[in-house]
Length: 233
Ligand code: C5P
Image 1 (cartoon, protein in one colour):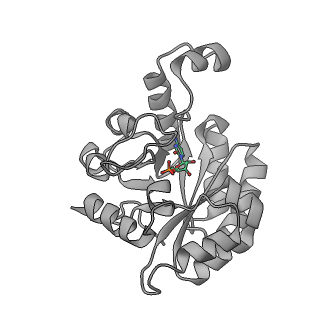
Image 2 (cartoon, protein in one colour):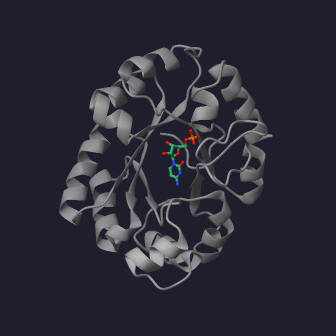
């Protein structure tokens, strides 16, 4: 099982299907054990087979489906995810402590679980107007992180900007997994606030998720090794 404090950056396999996944993974040496993220696009396109395939190569899988439903349904889905051999998966903290506890039970300690607090695409204004939560965004993120810890989950997905806040609201060993990572000079794309792998380490991120700077690089293996070196330096 992948560790929650990792020396390997988690590679976001944001590909449309199995063919692209196979082409991408075949570039790496067979002895290189990777930690990859399978998100909604790939999972809904390629199904559980893509997870089985990646696991058969000996890699670790973070299944990023952000479940949010009634506790019983989430627990049943988590049993399926556990049987697929997934290493790490996630839910929306907004589903509640009962839902998060049910998810944990479904995973039976075989798959690790983290939660999403407020999506980083949600602005404070949207949270006020749409969710009708009349606090600061930081207070809402802290609140959800505390509830996530209370439910017994290992940590949260968050922006690097939120790591200090979340650790202060929970504990230093509460896991913060952060996307939005760009090595110096890399294209930012649609990400708004990015940090470098070295900055993420300094800020206290436990795990980083990196997609396009690796998957779209002319030499993905070299890009991965460079980001890994910067993350572990
Ligand atoms: O290509 P890039 O490095 O931007 O990919 C980041 C990955 O992390 C994508 O799969 C994206 O969906 C995910 N993610 C994110 N921001 C969040 C949560 C997840 O970028 N707040």
